[in-house]
Image (cartoon, rainbow, N blue to C red; front, side):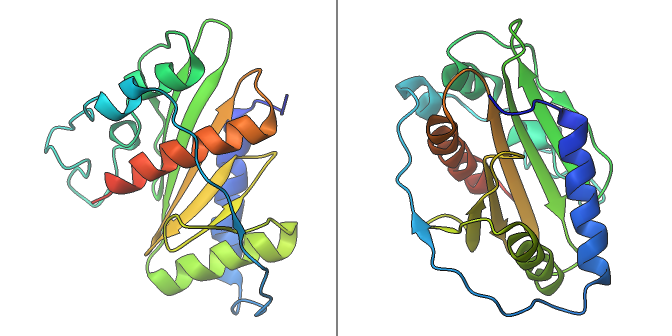
Length: 191
């Protein structure tokens, strides 16, 4: 079971943002993408309505993202197989996050990092791959990589990077597959 520290994840993403801002560009290293097929979590996941934010678009005034509208409590519960508390947002612009936790401390979390532009986002994304050697996954977003053990999946879409993580008793492969499915839902709800 991987280390479960929500604050560590926020720190890692914050550090990646700072490094991306200071980086002169990517190193040009390319890795062969790994294709992974997501598994169906449960029918309830697909049928669960998205939680609506005050402006019903998930993006409040000022360009912020309501991360709790990207993955719902019902979807988190279906993934973990047990009830969770309501989504706990933790926003520190340009990072927006939401986590759902069970009484057994199992967690589904989504973290959204908004870059100034797509070029900066690509630089930050590529730097994480170059530094950590994360394998890429094709078929989701503009680009995606397996960030285990820190997160399960990071997905780039334009100037937005979405990280989804599941911390429970299941193995890494199951966590990754379920995170891919949740990331697809989150991406479909981005503004």
